[in-house]
Amino acid sequence: MRKVIKTAILITVFLLAAGCNHVVLRQDLYEKVAFKSEKIKPGKNTIELYSLEFPKSYFEKLKYMEEFEVVSKQLLLEDKSLNLLLSRAMYDTIDSLKKGEVLPEEKIYLKTASDLDSAEMSEIDREIDVYVTDRGGSIQEYLNKQVYFWMVLNGKKSEFIGENLYTELDKQRLVEEIRKSRKEFSRVLNNAKMNLIIKEKDPYAVKNTEFSTSESADVFNPTDLPKWVLSEKEPIYLQGVKDGDFDKISEKEVKFNSPFVILDSEKFTGYTVVEGNYIFFYGGSDVKSSYHRYDFEVKISEVTLKDLFKAESGILLDELFDRKKPEINGIEKKATQPDKKSVNWGIN
Image (cartoon, rainbow, N blue to C red):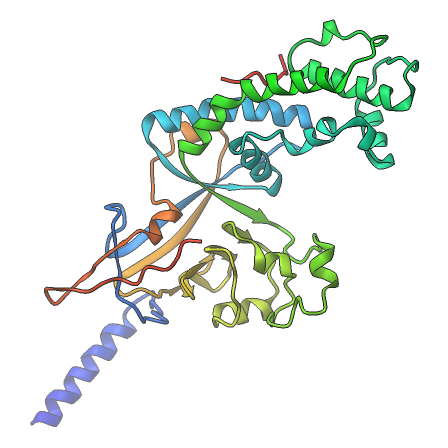
């Protein structure tokens, strides 16, 4: 009789499983955790990522950041939490503003004129078309062009006199005016609840000659991904990863320095955890999970800056590291806590 009952139960379970349209492949269940954020609940959790497109030309970027400043202030005012998916160029621009530094394209105009190399001089010549005196020699010519650049940003273009022999001190004063005008935006960026993710469309590009020429760079790298990808410390979204490399990553054979790596995948959705760092899969249907009772999936939406005004506050990637002690059978157990690695834009 017991055999009959056991057989009937097994058949029932099999039929119920066969009747499911979608089978969740729970893989790598190994740790019980709990999260402090009330937004993260047992079961399915969706992590919203808002993808923005950054313009390519310098002055278009300034205009874009002027609009981004307005958005950022509103996010801070509403205490809204958003994950933003950005190009490397936009990430570097925001990172510079957070640190109170000049933008990447502006560094050449900050450099002491006598230290400019021939390539930098050629770049300035391409970008700055204005008369400057030749009375002080070539160094003075480039210093005057640098001063002109900062005068334009400060809204003082009409005050520039090409015959003047401007000094490095004149230039520095103009630079400080720009820094001062951006100081409030820097404060907003450092206080707004935004997680920034860098999207890499070509993860196999060689970007660092030190990594590409080092004999020991790839000793512990089983993939064709370059060293800079594995060494990146910021959250990254990788597109176009080779099938063989993707398989090694999904099987936990690859260690990233980044706390969050997102991979395009035709097969998987969900996530896995490698040495405390998260690897998310985006685009597939078979669910991967690493933490008991918690499923996380990434959703990516292409948006404009204006769309962010209406975006709802969601789970920040950083909140996945903010843990508390889970209760197991009425007994609290300590959760594993991995180490967590208005502005004058000069365009008016």
